[in-house]
Figure 1 (tube, rainbow, N blue to C red):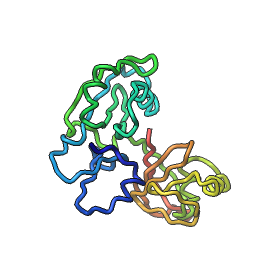
Figure 2 (figure 1 turned 30 degrees about the vertical axis):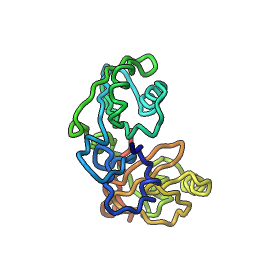
Figure 3 (figure 1 turned 135 degrees about the vertical axis):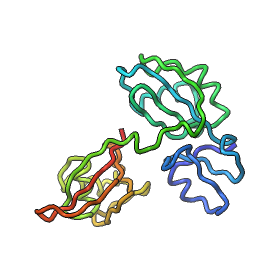
Figure 4 (figure 1 turned 60 degrees about the vertical axis):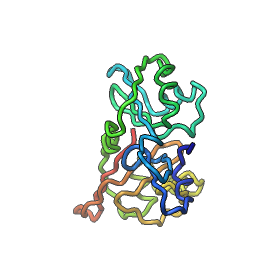
Length: 211
């Protein structure tokens, strides 16, 4: 049975007949297969909790791994107010639904849902607008993560930055719409829109911040 692949592992696959499926568009962790239906290879679970409770991706992941499951049987996790969505391999659905009752002290109710009930990725992004002097990666990092250009350059030198899932140390790399920027320890953003110039000659940018 196939396990979920990381973006780097998926990029190494060379079989042109493979279908890469993470349950929803732009999923990072995917399963590779050649024959359908897709429900044979992946499944989805909704985890409901009280809207006033706050849970993050790491809380859900920690709770699921606390059941003794291997990370490779789990895909992406999307967290919203009052519920979270977990993509996983079909053979672990029943086990998770029967045993996952809490994340920390917060109660959960787990139920399997159809794959087409998964939310879109953009619903889980918080828009952040800003301006940059250029579309260079170091400037984008400084604006997106609210740090100085010097701090951004240091993050790049330390190998903490990934551009579209690949480590990048060059601050001069140009960033485009749709690119993903991840900084270890700070989070990740998607470049949703690159606009025109301001009166001061800077460029408008809209980032989608992963919550």
